[in-house]
Length: 394
Ligand SMILES: Cc1cc2nc3c(=O)[nH]c(=O)nc-3n(C[C@H](O)[C@H](O)[C@H](O)COP(=O)(O)OP(=O)(O)OC[C@H]3O[C@@H](n4cnc5c(N)ncnc54)[C@H](O)[C@@H]3O)c2cc1C
Image (tube, rainbow, N blue to C red; front, side, top):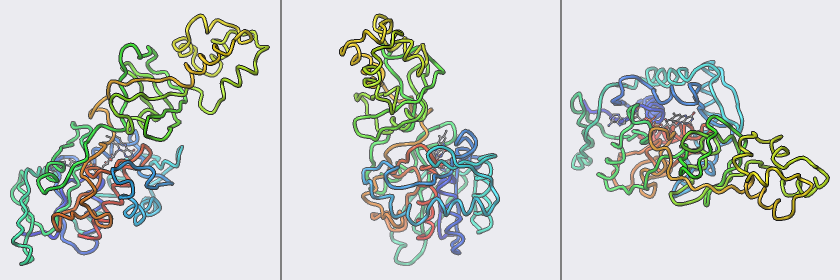
């Protein structure tokens, strides 16, 4: 039997694409080697799935072509997904920075996707691994099958093939590089991949022994925006939302800059507090954890009364607290990353349909594509939007 559409990967993008295409009357099969549906969705957002964000624009994504995602994001917006969430009566809440979460459980998003596939008549098969795909170009003219997938449960034929195999993070829950290999097989370029939205590991001489301590911080890299959110000290380095965001822009060998008192002009405050006889360490300890202040300021400086600080002392304090340079060794890798940076080069993909310009009928959607969202629901919104774009084209 030849299907109209075969989708490899039944994650967020694959299932949403399947429901969209099947609703248009296409005969759709989804193949996924995982035996349990939606495992990545289930662990997302701490089990509550940060399924989208109130404000989504191309600026919230990284890609070699920063404009590529615009078209798909404009045609399926956060409001469109919210309408589906509301229609099912799923309770949701808006958290900081417009982040949209389920109030109860990520299971509700998985159920929404599976029911949408079932209602539309898509055939979703779990425990089926696709090992290889052949493109039977000669059949194109005769409108017969174009793609033959060799799977763990036999051959699957389809006129259109959608690759939705996701990125490389969390191999333990079935991530593979199959989509990337397939892209190369069909002549597509790959943008170098790396773990993103990941904790950063610091060299021993830069690590602070403060595991579990979290502070508000603004973090910047050479290339990316400044991210102001929590920074969490870990055994091996630093984590927390501001660090995860910055990690997507950080490159090996580069420094990151940390401001531990964002939004405050420490130099001006210290200069204006000339009458204050308290020790500098104690004054800063009112705004920051005392152990952190101790770790950042030389003892002699921390012990000086603010009233006696000279210009050089103030500059040293400001540098230690507001312009702290760290030189990470690496990110914490694929086991801890939330998303993959890089992937299938968008240069040979249509931004409208996500179809390959090299092989007709072949589409790439979701995280396997070189479109990487910030923390905050942007990666799921890309999965929905790219799945919707391809689902309407296949
Ligand atoms: C811990 C964690 C938390 C996250 N939290 C959030 C969040 O709250 N909000 C947000 O926006 N994003 C979050 N993300 C990122 C988000 O989950 C992904 O970007 C999104 O799931 C990507 O969807 P996808 O469909 O492209 O890929 P995936 O969801 O990874 O799906 C790919 C599917 O392909 C299957 N597959 C792979 N190879 C094969 C093969 N050869 N044959 C058959 N099947 C195959 C896999 O089994 C998998 O089911 C989180 C990620 C992690 C790891």
